[in-house]
Length: 632
Image (tube, rainbow, N blue to C red; front, top):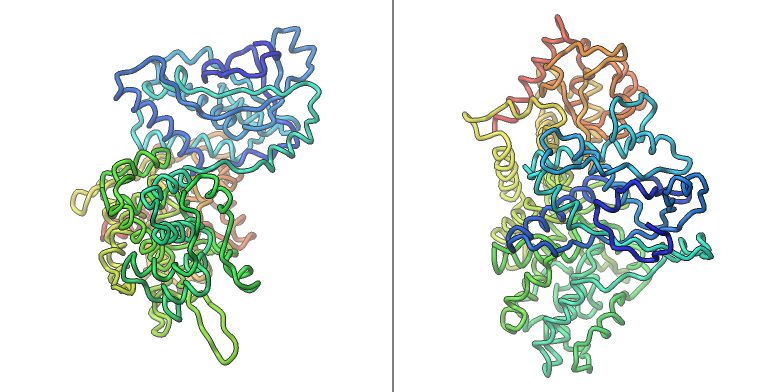
């Protein structure tokens, strides 16, 4: 294709043709997509493919994936071969992920209904030989033994596990991906200052989001009722900023009126909120989109202390997805948690003032429940479960974040709840399709008092039950527990490992031991004391390696058994994959860390090998871990 074509709408089949080559320049960051972004991309394409089947397979239906901004390089050698070389300015993360996805699909023996042979690896990296080599290894056999880029190799594993766990029809997926998924290639003029253009691209303004369009649509029912419209807008704007507690989205006067002096109460209904916000009447009668755009970054902040303290948390979900969760819990359980369908989801209430008013009240209610009883990530990258409270002492007044439970009793319920909630989240890190979060909000809705107080013990019991139900979906229940699904190496779902680590932490903390190994073992104790579940752990490791440095596979099929597996970060897995258990243990001792409690227990055994006491230790450990999983 000629570089003179400034705009080209390409199918994925055309994007991976052999007449173009794309280069990621050195000024671009490394490949950084993880499970949330990769799984979202696959699910989006899967949803679109299913939508095409439901409409009868219209051949002209396309799914637009975004844009790829490029610059045509002067490469005499490639031009002589009829190949155009493009330098990628914007879109490299998506393009690299598509390359890894194509490599995975080409590796499947049963994906034979679609001819993938015309698809070529046409992506490389300036000054990053490991990244280029890893992509080449994924596309071709035999593979090179040169060092690989861990994040790219990990992405390949994430893709494979997602396809298997979600039972995606690869032939349908391939067919839709190649023929219907499109990407817009934008080629900038040759005289473009690339450094300046790249700076502009990275600082460009944000587009209007769907939830802002939805806000304008819903507010239209209040035309002529300024007080109700102002109230709705105040609720929406306060809830929209998921990075801070919702009370801080209101002015100080409104906060006290809505949430009492300690900010721990809750209004009785929409009318009470309307009365409290009535002091800030908005005189504009027309809820225009430009009004929303103009006010989109406006926050009520009364003093500098609040500015410092309010933005200290990261939410596990964005506002568009939160809206869908509230709608699903309060209006219709059939609502999809796919934020691409946000506007469609609200179609059946958008002209109904009564339903919209009730939704606004529920939105604020669930946002308070979310803030108090669903984890957040703080600035120290630790999981927190905190409630915002206002206090006044003498002439000093401020607010603080306190444990949501057991502030006085010291029962440990707050910490245990934070641990089990983080277990759910790190197992399903993407913003969309958080089934566990929807179930949790349903639980909270049933437990909350008028003041939105919740019994922590009952909440924990309900979450424990939910975790058992999720495990049963994978392995079956009690006497029907199928351990065979856990002896499948890298195909074992992350949720199983995270749930096991949570239960190990819980029971070790309570004084239990496993195969005689408990907190009396110093190496285990030090890992339990500071343990927290991390979203970076996405790679299943074989503690005794699949292939040792000599090239032998000494354990045979036993290498994939659950007792020999644990969950670690992709970078650690790439670095240590063929190390012996003794060398892995030495590495973790020197770095004073273990990435999972199961791993810490595995490392506490003196011998770990395919024969004698070593294989007995593996079996003993496995029996203990399976008992812990089966026992609930």
